[in-house]
Length: 243
Image 1 (cartoon, rainbow, N blue to C red):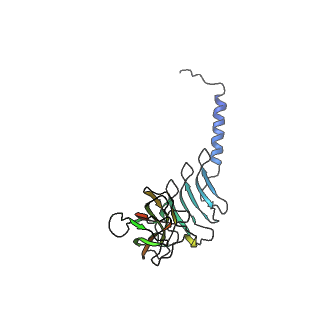
Image 2 (cartoon, rainbow, N blue to C red; image 1 turned 45 degrees about the horizontal axis):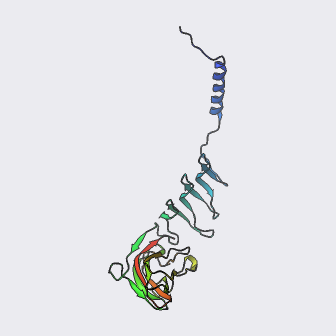
Image 3 (cartoon, rainbow, N blue to C red; image 1 turned 180 degrees about the vertical axis):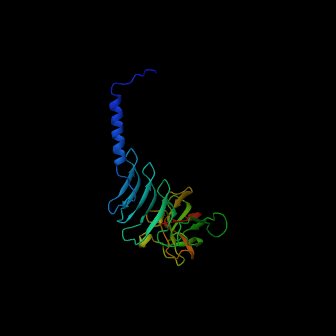
């Protein structure tokens, strides 16, 4: 029988391992576990929250899932404190909603829609010299998502002319933000003498509160605010997206 070199404390090591194993076996296991108050949080080694169940910022109880950079990926919760309903929403890496329940409708999923303006001519440019808002382009849409963003380019015929662009409903009433939040027209500043891109995606994005699935007409309007030249508006598309 061969001889083996064992450390002098080998027996103690074995006894210690046995004691640790016994403690592990006696430790309570989590079977059906519930949290009545408080929260459960899963963190990465660097402290970044990856998963959270508990009280959310708007006072309700829900679930939030984060990427390892801390950005929100998915959440089930209220949109605001007095909201009676929770939404399940999936977010992309820059924080924009890309799937889930709509904000002000119970019909279900978020829809993204892009609409081309009429007339049918590709990117028809319309010149405006009026000091009051006049129609430049119409969008005939099926209302699937509340927020409406108009992407367009503008150019003034001289360096002293400026203008503004806004969205309205079919009656010519300027679209507001959620709960009537004020939405300022998009300014075409003096000096816009080369074609420049603009859009109406502001902090209070214009939205239309018609029933989901209803036919809606969105009007793009423009006016001249300074100078004696022409403000030319060339549409790109109307982008319909969730609140």
